[in-house]
Length: 294
Image 1: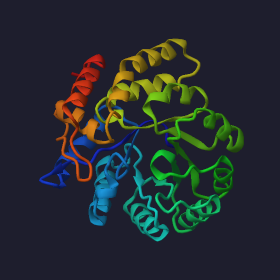
Image 2: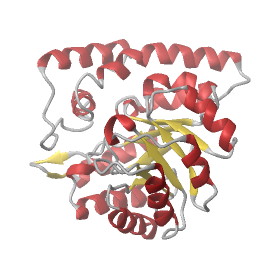
Image 3: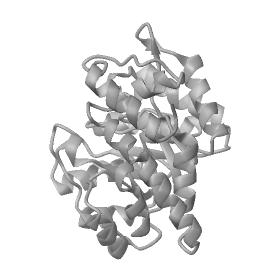
């Protein structure tokens, strides 16, 4: 269903307004370069600073422009359950293929609170839900036991795992089986993640290395082809400095700067995010050169 290189798409701004034309160009760039899916309005898409109308608009544009060619997994999470339901219903009505829903941040629910949050959303929609588990941003970590309970519900399909703990891949595979979709949210561990049973990556790096990320994912998921496995390792080495450079400062400021160097989009971000420092710019430039993108 959802596998391979799925881009966590940046949201381009012009004069602090959503640049719809540029957004459409970015989507077509990914369609041409082998990206396997698009996530609009995620963390990398600066969802916290999008208005509700902008949030809904980028999902609508993504669905319209992808036009069934690749899946759209709409970011519709919130720390308010009712708000997450509203955004999720809109995404489903717009034609999104799935929902990416982050664990509620700031209000720190218990494991039972997490279960009830996702259950309520599950009960109000009819398309697959990917749990987004990112303790570094949301402060809470959904346990494997809670995921297992949720997987029994009709729409819970898998997880975007941004814990950085590769042992979780094994634990989740053992607990939920192969039908539970596991996507890493960390570009840097994607090779090992897939080797352990993952099926792809919701990627920041794919914003500026779409073709390479797509080739990498296809090769790393071809487990019985030794030549492709070697190619996956080669690409991983090429992209490794870029994976690191894009997180020297808060995402998505570095990847937006990289996109500006490649003439894909401007590096404008919304406050409280700011453009990256000159030292970070040098690291991003060098990493793009190592990956032969610049």
